[in-house]
Image (cartoon, rainbow, N blue to C red; front, side, top):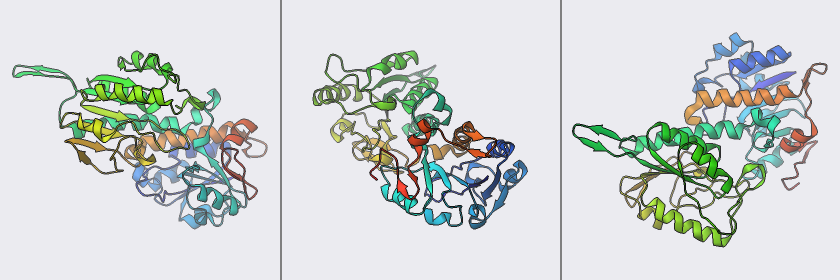
Length: 373
């Protein structure tokens, strides 16, 4: 079993899909590994560290040649995988809804695409869930970046010269990223409030010491979709939520938005009119900017000023914490493949539940039921 680890091609991608830790673990299973030269450089992993861990380090053509499995953070164009074995697995993130043409290209190339975004949200797959591990870091980084742009202190400070009031932080969307954003802002000393369309998150918000801001007694409050994601709300709920948010957002110093709906553009949570009600010097961090944005006027990787409010968001937030993000991503990948490792065959053999969930292409066809064939 030969496993190749690729250097990332995508712009602004600094992560890597394997670390020396996971290289050693794969080698202990009996796999041979080849890492593309420079793959870990941006994640502070020199080539020598991979060599010491037991991997070969080589240019891409040599790394890919004869590979049974290819590991990447963002799936490369299949033309970059010439030389891999027919039917080779490629385990990576594929953005299947946003890049269907890439999925079809993998099918045409005879490669088996395993989309880590489609990992089912079940107990035994928690350690394999790259979306959760990366979102956790993204929520943390969003607060730090917003705090830096804010230009004022987060905690209340009482000094001989007077008192500095605590910053008010409002988190919109309480998934993994939102919960980490709440916890991080609280650790920095801010007054934190949060909202979500899923009523079940109220207790989670309060358990972190934040104020829960919710629409009450309106149809559609549950908002619980499959896999723990939110669904779109009723028009009545959307109006009630907009009114509530408008009155609350005007008093905030920092707003973090995190709302995503799988397979759809990010829902619009904050309009230009609402931004205009905020105090000059306030900051909004849009974690969904790469998927269309929760905030009107947000632009990936740019600081935008509207009505005296700074709007920001990264196209790839976890990549700003490349070393830790890579370590968690690589462990997710190892946990995924090692869970199905067949010692006799010296390769992983996926079961039906998880295999069918993550497999996009097989035998020259698009086979995932969530995608058009």
